Image (tube, rainbow, N blue to C red; front, side, top):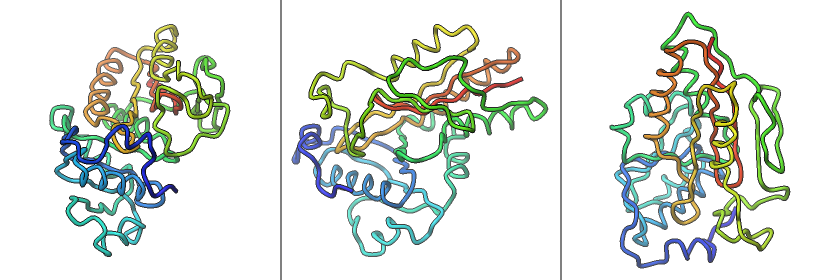
Length: 260
C-alpha cells in the first residue's frame, strides 16, 4: 500500500488550498489495509485544507482492526475519525434508512474487495417491504460491452475496461497511466446505455464511485437511499428486474435484482 500521495493526487488537491469539499458523515468500508489507507488520505486532505467533515466513520467488525490501532496511537488527532464496530450490512441498514434528504451531505468510501453492498442493501429493503414476494439476484440478460467481464457463481457480474492490472490507488485520470493515452471510456455511461437498451430490465440503479480528493473514491449516500425509492416504485407496479451497479469510470460490479 502506498503511504505517500502521488503527483496526480497532489494535482487534485495541492497543499494549502481552501476547503473544497464539505461533508457531514464519511463512511469508510473496512478498517484494514484499504480502509486505513483511505482514512489516512482523508486525514491528509483535512489537514491540508482539501475537505471538512463532521465525522469520518470507519466500519469494521474487528474492534482491533488497523484503524482501531492507529486511533489508539493518536494518529488522527485533529480529524474526527471514529470506529463503528459492526458488520457492513448492519451499519448500512441503519445509516441509509434515514433517507435521501437526511443523507444529502454524507458519502461512502467503498473498498475494492468488498461485496456488492449496495445491491445487498436494496434487496434487504425490498424483502422487508414485500415479505410475501420472491426475489433473487439474477444473471444479467446479456453480455456487458466491456473488454473484460466475468460472471460469478452468485450471479453477480464484474466488468472492467482494463485488460491489465491497475494500481489500487489509481484516480482514473483523463490520461490513463497504463495506456498513456486518453481515457475515452466511462463505465457509468456504458452501463446506463446497456440498461436503457435492454427491454428485459425495468430500471437501473447505477452508483458512481468518483475520486474526489487525495485518491479517495466516494459514492453519495443520498443516491443509494434514493435508489430504494425507485425500487419501491418499480416493484410496486408488479414483477420487475432492476440492474444494480456499483462502478467507477473503469471497473464495476453488477447484478440484477429480480422481484417476482
